[in-house]
Image: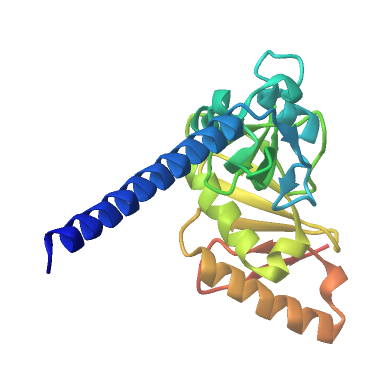
Length: 248
């Protein structure tokens, strides 16, 4: 190739490289501009989504207060200033929240998904509180009262595990969950109150819980069939292999 041809090819490559560099520079500028504009965008709120809305223990208003961040309104907050991790931690620290997920859409809308805790029972002694699905203390809510079995007697707030195991067994069985409306704690033994009929169940200790529940269900089915269910005032399940009934 002649010298003139080589110079022409070099000039063409140089111009092409310059164009590519300029194009890359424009793309970097536009990307930085869009990123900066997106970060400086003011936020807007969307309705809070509760994954279990049937028990509104915490209100949407309470959730939104955490998003305000002392700025008067979420509309005063820029996207770059929003600390999602901190807000999620604050929401999860709420005594009624099991889990929370916060996210921001490309157009600046703040979304919040909240999973509330589920109470298993309500303790009513010198203090009123719930026991949640993990066996932990949970305060009552000013927003909503959950319909769960009522626990009375000598309940040790600092040692709820044994009571929790009994409540968990009750709540896990559809029949017992429907029929048991109250639990009386007497030391390490439990008396169950039946919703539909006027008799007590001496449940005994938390041992052999599933066997006791199965035995009671068998007795209940037979007593309904024989139409003798209303003649009893006490059903004793303390011995796992037996059901001892006391008539009125």
